[in-house]
Image (cartoon, rainbow, N blue to C red):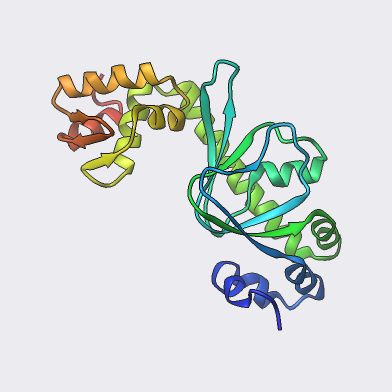
Length: 223
């Protein structure tokens, strides 16, 4: 009987339905690992030895500048794989960023030798890997485009609205990391929002007062 069959069926049912012997071998080689919150999943400059498929939790991939500023590149969610992990396995390069478990994470860890063998033998697996890689890469490029070309005020408004709640428990530093900005810049813009009665600020909490105004800002209707 396949180990962790229930998790495969829940998060990656297409693997269970494939029927290829190469896929069966890949699934049998996978180990289920649990990673505590705040622990590093991989480090800057390390070599990739495993292919990860996330089952639970969230992993953030970020860059850290020399002055300590963090820039969030993307997040890996359940049912997905990591763009940089795939890239480093295919190229043999070292990781150009680091990954941190945002909360308790569960994942399938597939050894690199099993990954390469399945890539060679399974058209299904090659399609799965490259399709996921392309989708995630597109998201990363879109995010970088926003950081470079969209004003911080519009990106901040969009981030606040994405919480889908009026009361948001988040620090200015956490917002800055997500937006690829500095805490001081985020704080200054939040204070401007507060002066316009769009939000109310308290320690660790932001309350949305005028959702319509924030929405118009994201669309460029308010300058």
